[in-house]
Length: 117
Image 1 (cartoon, helix red, strand yellow):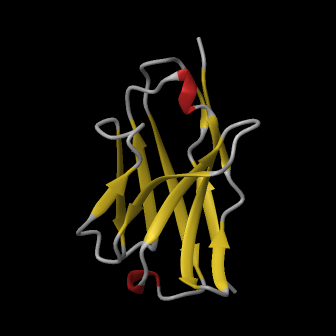
Image 2 (tube, rainbow, N blue to C red; image 1 turned 45 degrees about the vertical axis):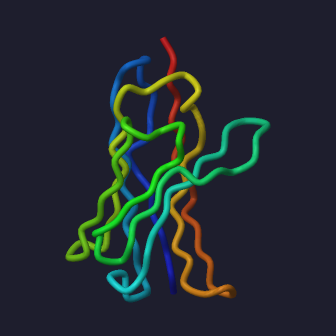
Image 3 (cartoon, rainbow, N blue to C red; image 1 turned 60 degrees about the horizontal axis):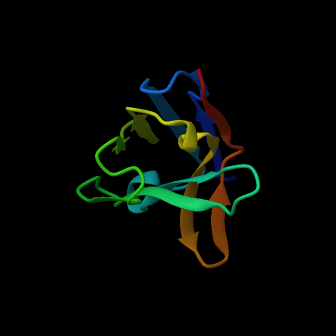
């Protein structure tokens, strides 16, 4: 059974940092690219960052480039999202995603990130 478990969200002041983690279970983690998405209140879910199966390549939304870094540890079946220089507009629920096939698209439960003074 595939399961994605996010952690690391919380309340942080503008300019602060958080590190999100997503532990994956139930599939061969090292075979698949992974992604982070976020959804702010009243907005559609958007792609934040993606990483290839080996971790050799990453891509980022323009809004987070230079501030966020996605990485993975295939030995621990875990992906990370290091978020620096956080802004109020980064406030959202952050979701981990594993797209295995068109019929096997898995999401975590989400972790809330709130950036506020």
